[in-house]
Image 1: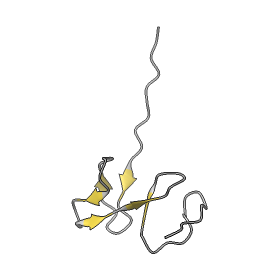
Image 2: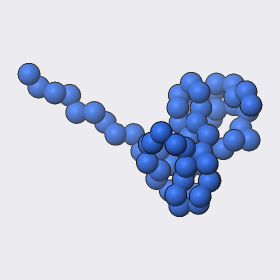
Image 3: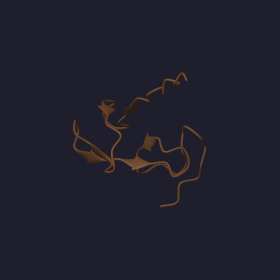
Length: 61
């Protein structure tokens, strides 16, 4: 049985654009900022956003 290769998604810090590791804690080691993730699409975004630029979800804060 052949396994499908999972495509790794690169996540970048919305502040410094450095690649961040997907982990249990949302933290960018490069700029030392805590990252907020969209509750719908789980992509990183700045905390001050009211709407996710990736999926359009409303961010309640």
